[in-house]
Image (cartoon, rainbow, N blue to C red; front, side, top):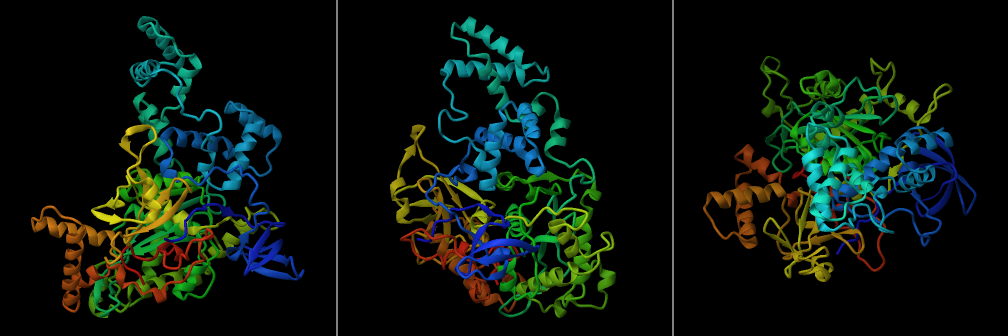
Length: 635
């Protein structure tokens, strides 16, 4: 069993902070640049210059009780718990945005949200210590938010009146609902709930749905979907990040035979204030919510290990949580996993208005810049047949996915970031530095906090499932997984309903489904769970989907795990035999995770290990966040 993946905090480098680097303790004295600090060795007193993304915080009292709630997975909170966390976050957001805030400012904001200023400061401290919105979910001390003490008749009465009288285009006021509840309670001869209880039930409703059902569809659309305006908040680094996809105008070749296999998809994320590329992702698969999530996690995390793994020299000093992600209306930008992942880290996910392409101008221009550069490389397809006349793209194709990835990153880091941008009047790298460190006239926002555990952050953007634990373990898509950590949960029932099996949260990386990540409710940590039959080969979710399609076409019934892996073996044999014949077969081979060349992958510092547990060296999430890596193709 691998090491549990627990921590999801962020580390902010600030003067006076005690940190560790290469096994030694230092105290930060000065911020030197956007990615380095001066620090004093606490043992020798010597001064040293250290990279921010190599530092780890030193927690002075690990045994002291923390104000940060346990690292419960974001998918496990109820809608009401999550809504309350969001409400608290919106209350403290003006304080977060105003570093020179006063007590008077806090008291005014607290009054607007109906709480005491001390409560607001408590929420602010909790959020700043944790670095994520789920820390604001109400704790279990006392009565939890959402716990209902009314009788079932009273609850049903309130629910019915809200449905009949409040969620309608009549737009009745809360006081009318209170009076109607009291009237119906008298008729039913039951005790009327307190008026405040009725009002609290109304406040707990989903704002988006409430607006729509009360006839405010346009308001709901403006609040929750498109951006209205030309990015008025894009006035500092990471205030607004735009993300989009494009098929790259180039034919790539396979690793084994170096024969053409097709065009890759390129996903890019750009900081609209500085024009710095903050994250990216390359894949042969069509864009999906998973590829978007991988791009976001790459944008938030440090790129040092990633550059080392690619063999790209140069610096890419960009990391940190963005305020807003701006995307178009494609389906891959919508979905519960992506939306809740963004909410967890306080990211406002906004969609471009339909038929308003100028709202995505920054990312579109970057895509054009990349397209112009890609046309200079062998195998380019150009943008139209006239440009391509006399050039055989497939015959000239020479780059593999990993080599293409290297060239793209090298161009971004060492050319695009360094040369003068016509609209900025300076290179994006310089604009970023000004935004972070400031100058004589304008203060900077400071070095963004670094994720302490990129693996956990990546998991928050991965697809999830809910399953019960049976005697054979856990089954997903007819594949069984087992580890002894599951034993306490075998055939357990739901704590709130002893007639139902208890459902547990599982995350899965579609690039390699040979293991899943089980969220252990006792330790509040993810535990990797391998195949029950460890003799089965690794495969991707796309290979599994293809195997299941073939079995259906063959009319096979009662398909089980053994038949799936037998079919997988036959399919891979056919593909191997056909590799030198067809482009489709070579493309299919790239989806096999057993083709991963692990020597090309950089090692990522493992999460803090729990005592008595083995190394995470062979765990997928012990590897660096590599959003460029294809969902099924690995370097």
